[in-house]
Image (cartoon, rainbow, N blue to C red):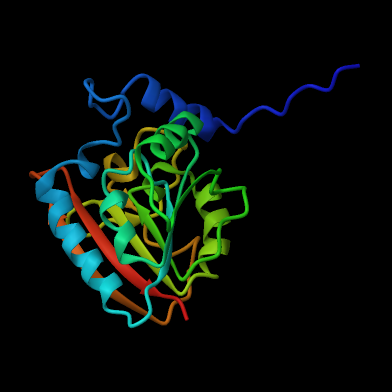
Length: 219
């Protein structure tokens, strides 16, 4: 009897569909990770702050970019690191990135960050990734996040007060319509950290929330 192939997780199917159907926009692009990865008003100050953080260390950091997407942001950070490992769940996207971007200190890996073993580095970058995932998947990821010294986390959250971590089904949408957003320090994630620093914040048009980047020092 032929053994049936293991079916991919729904998250992988969802992310494949997002890029295949261009649900995040970018009709003229082969792959497009959304406005949050391309709007200069959003990404320019973000890059300035992250590059300053990376360059503040005497010894360059090794970095793992979880959910690297179309790499429009990560490509600017590579030269400021000792090693840069970019990870995404969409295999065709990773193959495309490997063809477009090369550097001695750059690697691309196709991994499901909620179930696969992740690379060991000094710092991990998660830019608007967790907001698309279910609480169960985030809980799995948080177990690994505890092993990194620094976490650079960017999330799209409501303006003002909100209820953290309302559960959703993994996919294109985020928690904003539920007046919720990800806060790793709150239940059910309860990430224990040594310190945190607000690195960058961008307010969108009224009713659209804000994009916030925080650096967590875990140990």
